Figure: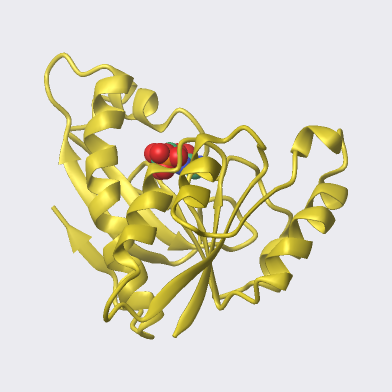
Length: 196
Ligand code: GAR
């Protein structure tokens, strides 16, 4: 059984979907939900499900990314995860941190990578006049949002879409995509998942 730690920054809806899926014959179980924000709503949701939680407030480490990561890695290593899922984790991790978990850290990003790494993905897709948008799950490598792709889900861009409307439509697919990818990945299968 693979041990999965999940890193979140906000509501944690993707984290919840992953946790809900990790039951029965699933090859993994959640062992920790950690956040850079002690107020992240997802922490309380995870705790209510009986999952151990940890918070390391990044604001306590101004201009000290290495210090923040040294604090974050403590509960993470204590949980002995085989896999780390970034699920709406909004801090950029240093190459040193990423390299430590090379090949076993996943991220979900709300665009069809390699399009639109970084922030404001939906506004950028709309501004470009794209006909479709979507989400990508990928392995985390030192270069931002550029690791090997493990799965993608696509949605149409509709007339009159705002970034918020598009984000909501993509999020529905994120909730299908990430659990499908994690199931496959935890079973040792890295064949990309394609949803449409
Ligand atoms: C999701 O849309 C996820 O793709 C995005 O943040 C949202 C978190 O929602 N992640 C990123 O933008 C990472 N760069 P959630 O907290 O409800 O899962």
